[in-house]
Picture 1 (tube, rainbow, N blue to C red):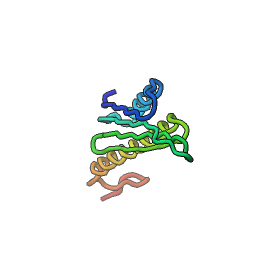
Picture 2: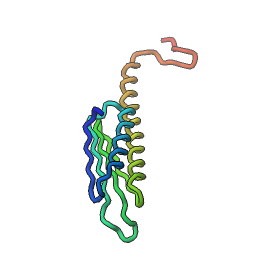
Picture 3: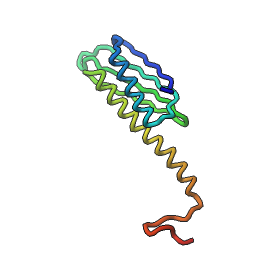
Picture 4: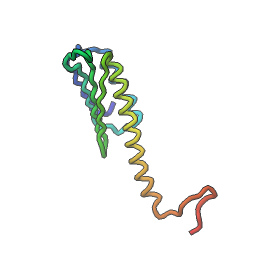
Length: 124
């Protein structure tokens, strides 16, 4: 892992299994965008609420060149579900960011070229 990883756990007993899951999920995100610079995850179980039970909260803060992806998710019963949902949302955002950056670069490269059609390049 080239990215700097920081895991903060609040009001949840430390679990090697949970940390291992975080590291595997982070490795998967690095395959989506290998330019991740830093990765901070906060796992917590906020105060006990009478009606909602004890929701688990996951916050991801991922820094990449030219941007930042921040995701927060909660799940009432399972920290692993909240973790999964947060990583899926981060993955989607990283893909969108990569497409935006590559699309902007592609648009700059294509400027000045003739427009293309189904039959080929239009005559100027």
